[in-house]
Amino acid sequence: MRVVIGIGGGIAAYKAAMLLRLFGKAGHEVIAVPTEAALKFVGQPTLEALSGNPVSVDVFERVPEVNHVRQAEEADAVIVAPATADLMARLAAGRANDLLTATVLTTHAPVILAPAMHTQMWEHPATQANVATLKSFGYRVIEPAVGRLTGPDSGVGRLPEPEDIYAQALMLLGWNQDAVGEGQPTGGSDLPLAGQRLLITAGGTREALDPVRFLGNRSSGKQGIALATAASELGAKVHLIAAHVEVEIPGHLDRVTRVSSALQLREAVFAHLADTDVLMMTAAVADFRPADYVGTKIKKTDDPAQDPVIQLVRNPDVLKEAVIYRQSNPQQSPHTIVGFAAETGDSTTSPLEYGRAKLARKGCDYLAVNTVSETQGFGAEDNAITLLSGKGGHEVSLQGSKLDVSRAMLRHIAQEFNNHSPSSPDGPREVQ
Image (tube, rainbow, N blue to C red; front, side, top):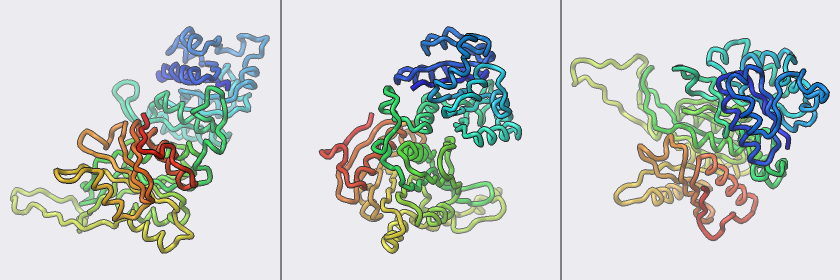
């Protein structure tokens, strides 16, 4: 495939060099089309060396070729990263005053924009209006990440890492990541979840004590959001129910519902359970909540005898209730229910033994078990999961980045509910 990489004039332009390398390494022909301002951040020789093609910025260069028309007509995709506020304003207005904007205006290929700018610029009504206009043109927008910006500031507006842009672009384009060297679009066999409706919960619930305090847990939501991303890549329609998460929620999901407490999460799950094919309960749902909510901030006094005693009550077991609901409504409920168990183990029982016992109690189809501690599991980039089957299937070991683990888990589950044999029927499998 021929991919035009447009590069706007922001400090994040240096990341475009790695994006060129990723597409080139996968076998695509890449054309770098920077703005004039972008060349103040990353040099023309660098872009030419990484792309293997000459670099132009002006419509008056290579005039006999009518270069902007040539690039636009021959492109299979146009990806702009970073897309600055100024560049998006010009695209939204239909400007064509340099090679990049003229190419975008002329092409019939899919256009993907990855904005990057300071938080105030991203949140400004003018920028948001321009983004809405660009989406109405059919352009796809990869939401900016949250993190360190230029200087000491942090916030939304950071350009996602090149690997993330690359993966999201392949998903949005419908290109097979395993065969991108040949430039093949994904077919049905590469979209095992096509037509499936997945309801995925993510993050940790917060149980309010008073207006400023809550009981919570260490869940970051990374694994649940990785599952949602992987499910979209594999063709599913994804509804994410997100409690407290510490990472950016992808903008390409079909639906996102935000919740805070376990009771709110339960309400959201059961509101959509009848319209769900696969339920994945990845969220860390609090087992207990304060029996009483205090409407004003609990004060500390000089008398220790006046320190409050917090009484806890059980929260509903949403996973088990979903299984019971399916038993009563077999024609209008998920055909597959997946639970997650973060276990620590103790001196007498291993995390996996606790997981097997939990699977028997819950009655779900699968239970993903992982060991957690202060330094393992919650918040980490990688994960190691043992997927237990309530259907008598083999236990499957999955290890790697949370996104890779998610892809492997979903493919394995899809194979089973489509009456196929698991990829590795003889025993556990590792994803490195």
